[in-house]
Length: 175
Image (cartoon, rainbow, N blue to C red):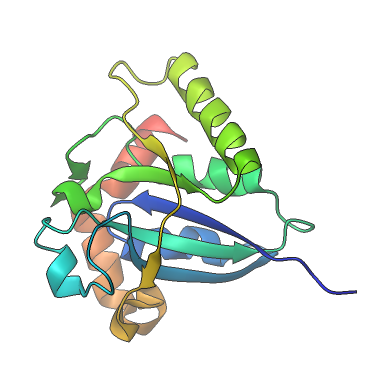
């Protein structure tokens, strides 16, 4: 029996902080840091960090839907971000750090839009939910040194994560 893997793509600010939360789940085969949504073909980190290419820093998750559902992955995504910040995430500022859900098919679009509506209606946030639901476009893997950063550079990863304020936000708003 061949397994049918699917992809989910999310922008949630700095991609270093977006890998580990997904990487540890059964059914997730890969979490790749990269760039999507912009106008430059094969952008580099140096290109994207200028905020001029239109790309988001993002993660693309390859998963087995027979083991983990898109809804579960989407639920994990929401609790990693501040969905009310249109200017970036935590200490990372600029359009390349905005949040977005990039859907790969109509079913993902429907589930993502419903999920966003649920977040809007649940009353956790007083500001509007600005995370966009967008059609997936070309995804360009980031340079190798960005891949699995939390494993390769655990001290730098932890320092950056603590400094960002992400964990404090998650604890105050999602837990």
